[in-house]
Length: 286
Image (cartoon, rainbow, N blue to C red):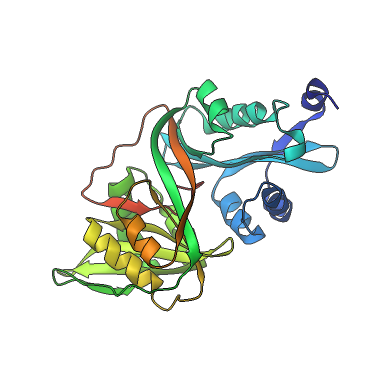
């Protein structure tokens, strides 16, 4: 079927939770590790579309609102058999319509970046994925009178406050979903929360993120604490390309693999600081 015929035959509809298993199969076809459970979380947190040709789902795209003015885009997949037919542009136009004028953020693969540039996105950073089986577990170093404790749902208001200071985005529903699906650690200093890390099942194993802290030392402490007891387990972390955390992850047995470019269409969110996001919840969710 020619490209024009494919575009004419393609039907877009809203994505639904029942699509999770089908979307996971489509992700595997392009080498992505997402499980049906990962898709269920992503679909439950946002909106998006799938493209069908007859009874077959051949493409997906999702977006997640973070307040009234920003959103992230992700899980943008076109099956290998139908790439180059213009379906990617159809997906993006559908997301633009749903996102209602928000400034948009995404992490672009090498294959997807040329299309995003044509649609008005510009590069604003880069992310490097580290993953592998943990071989050496770093010892957490608690500096400046710090202590760590488990995070619970009662901590969500303060976690959201720290995360918004680090990202400029209100991401409460994301933090709740990640914490409910996994576990978390809060770094305490002087009776106040000074950072946190969340960890959950994802893809081939576990993902640590987001990690939010006021400085690199606290981020290293939280990351080391998250790796405790994980020797022999497959762990993933997505960090800013060039971050000093890369050396720590490499020493723990994780290897740098795929890199993506962060892009924005519109205005970047304004982070108030002093906290920073040191690892992502995922490349799609930010």
